[in-house]
Length: 135
Figure 1 (cartoon, rainbow, N blue to C red):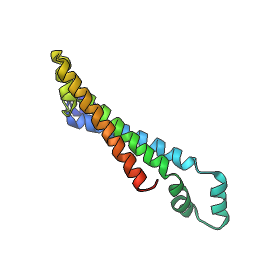
Figure 2: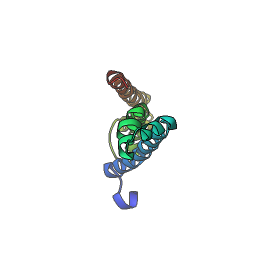
Figure 3: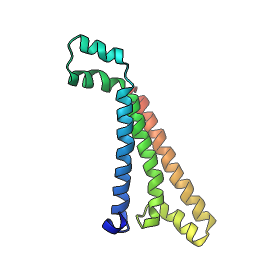
Figure 4: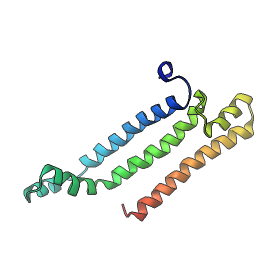
């Protein structure tokens, strides 16, 4: 992508969005496929259409897998965005990159701790939201 979009934020954001689409789609499909076939058969048996089965049966029963995919996408994006500093995309990765470039152990530690703390904090926040919505 660098020959097309160059170095910087556009390349990093494009790569992160494309990677997240894969994670979200994979978890979305896995969540929908985990619904018991007997439940789907019962829904069809009472006269539901395919769209009704999707919206009223499959989606509510696969909420946990969908939300887990969202959490995984957010946390992995934070981790990958840290590495994006190596292509001049900015962010907390700049502190880590400057520390590695200058061999400054304090910058390396602060960059690592702040990035890891942001990922852990986002994960904890999303877990609390998940519990709040009773998923």
